[in-house]
Amino acid sequence: MPDFPPEGFEPVLNDGGVSFETHVGPIFRQTDVPDGEAVWGFRAEPHHCNPYGMLHGGMAVALADTMMGSLVFHAIDGAPCATISLNTEFLAAAKSGVWIEGRAKLLRQGRKVCFVRADLFAEEKLIMTASGAWAIISGA
Image (tube, rainbow, N blue to C red; front, side):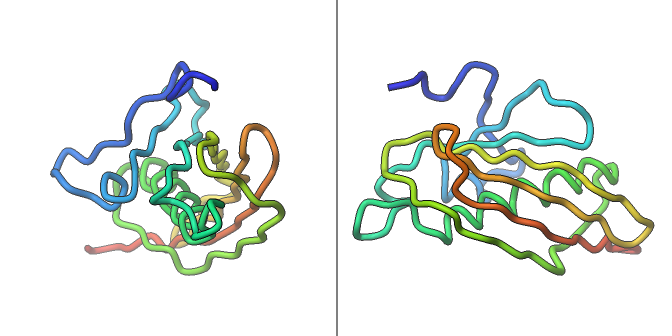
């Protein structure tokens, strides 16, 4: 079994205490990625899976949404933002115990909306694609 987490990953932590990421995790992020990109991952544990021992689609979508939203948040210097559109395509299943890795890229940053794309892999096998838009919330 590969190292867990892989080298270069650190836990996704919220300085304010409990967060969605800590509740559904543990989730990790790669520390050395170019600006406008993000790489997050987790090992698919039984609590991330459906009764058949396969990664639950909701967990895959949760990783994509959270990773992509964090990417936008950092791109806009910590301003509030919210998902306004998220499209996903499930391409393959992933078994419990495997490393799930999401790779996201900021496609376009406007004054009010950012667009992001992500791919999720199970040990290098593409299992899901996602694309979405995030509103930049001004005056919050």
